[in-house]
Length: 355
Image (cartoon, rainbow, N blue to C red; front, top):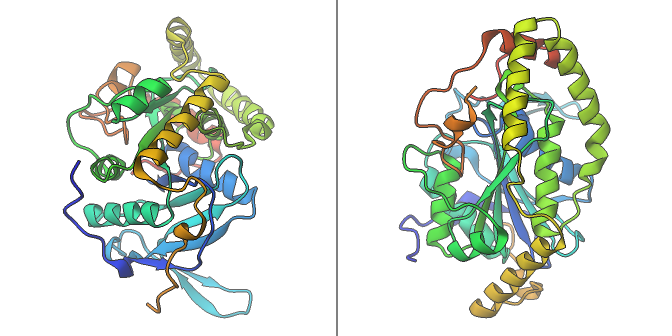
């Protein structure tokens, strides 16, 4: 594969530390269209908040955001001073997460200069010697809230897809930032996997602990890194109860959800293999990749970074989506009554975070 044509500006990435990482994996999620229920960014926030994570770098937002659309926020700091918080894309490192350290990249999805931004993400992955990139996403789908949240995985690398039991993308059509990022990483010969969860279109607003738990469970399943996803069980139970109570007021919605349940029960199957064999195969693939490139599997001094510079579709509809970022080639339709029940269950009447 050829290298990307667009070279990232070194000043775009602002480094704040020099981590010494062990076999790091880069996990990426962006707020916005491909983060229904904030499941993807919620999964990274969950791991970040449960660990001694520290920010190691961020991407300067100046070239990538329309600040009339993604407006900065004025805040009063603890010292009483007014400060502006700009839209951010940040990387935090999570050490001592056997068998891998993690680099968690999250932030607001930018609207401009995607190719340059993706080159910057690839540069961060190379600088930190990340062995693989895993992108996370969540998309609205014709699935019931009362059944397990299905997670689908894909990889363009044929060998990686076959060994981990993942799909290979076959989608053709409009794509988004995550799709662009996958193309950039594939061209840079950096292994990348997409994990995405389906969220009920009638309750697509945040928070959605069930979708977050499903992504965390599959991250652990694929990589072997412990995510503590079972600690969300009680939150999931309470969320399901609130949705049950909200939809029970409308017999038409209840009938519609039963139809979705029947469809889910008929087609239920695991989208990813289960068991220790999957994690073992994942580790074997990474070891072989390191041997081919001559990279040190333990990171060490070679991984040091430079000093900080001064500067409601149905399941059939999802078949026509970009497997990297859920972008649909047609228009998705939902159920107005179900959407109203969703607002009730979420305790707000604001728009869902799909825009």
